[in-house]
Length: 392
Image 1 (spheres, rainbow, N blue to C red):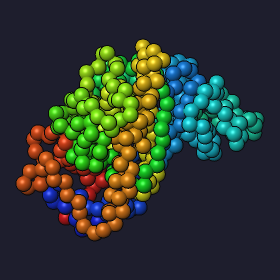
Image 2: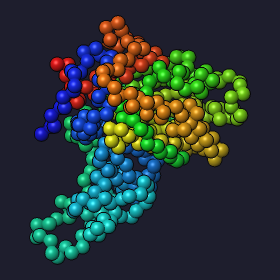
Image 3: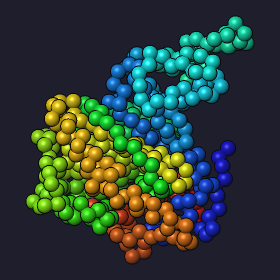
């Protein structure tokens, strides 16, 4: 039975460009989001096969508030399990990544193979006669791959993955370089003080205004397009003008485009509800995020190289990724501070209103430019529908 929708202090605004501030900090709304969105009929990008390339490799992650264990099986498949023993619910793995020939619960030493099947349980002679190993395998999520990216869902009601991704699927392919042949370079991880919806509400309007580096590098020209999806995704494809010569960088090689197969273009796929994939210059960046509470959001930045890259190119990608687009990168450094201030500001009464790219009646202009903000409103329409908020 589905939880009843919490009552807002006022009805959901009628104008499509307005949102109530209280949705960004109320605990009861956050709990309903975990149920209806994160555990609902939505596909979540949980990783890439490059993070666990050989049998026995595993990675732990979270979707919403559910702890998950991803495992590369002997059969070559990557499966996503609940990170919980089906016996008494003990957490199975605590490491972020590693390699195991089997999974052993530390509490009662039940052992599972790399495909999640129970292979042994101590004290079996005192179990009920009806006990069967096949009834106690690790609980799996429905999981599929596209371009090496791993998507999982808790719900049998989720649409087919290709339908869910729509045009975002092609942007993901382009951002990865055309196929799944990438290698993990490393991670950066950060916890932002802000609601997950504040962290995922980034748009092009703020980029040249908040981020000084965008102005210095002349990357705010608006020569790009946005596309939106019925499932709340947004994609951006934008030209990158050659950065002007200046004294603001001691080492201009940091912003060089060295991949000979690339044109100077930025690709962004912002997937509902919370994840992001970016290709900017030579940076290949996947962001897997999850809400810790109504007031904190954890984001894992994973960086990749192409398998054909030599050591010099890998070093260039790694250095460029961390210094440009990481949580303390000189392009994106200011985001964390703004997330904090958005969250603090949400405790004042009333609504917020999007403006750039909005029509006179609060609707959305048919064409959205690179630096408009109104394209985010399609995502908010999906959110409102899934949460059940009404105008009366």
